[in-house]
Image (cartoon, rainbow, N blue to C red):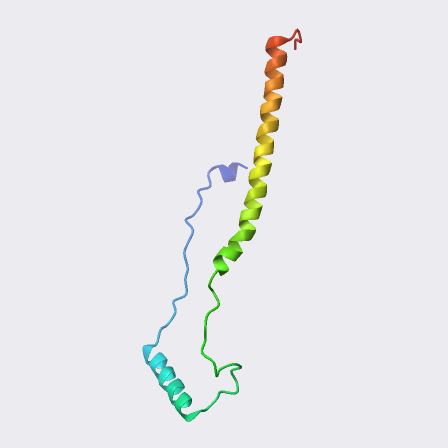
Length: 104
């Protein structure tokens, strides 16, 4: 217990592994892809490689946030319920203290 009293926490360290970008490799891959398209060569190891890549990201952020909005709505409702109960209890205590013959 006394040892933790004098303990000073250390600063958190940030560690990131750098990524290597090779523009020559990208250019080489693009040229290879164009040549294969011109010759009609299909990569067998890549399923669906004959169609271009199209990201399916449109609207996914909003869909993911819907779950959070439902949980935040529940939390807000629970918080409001606790607040109302607390106000009712305090009102009852003040009523008993000021307007009744009830003594502690």
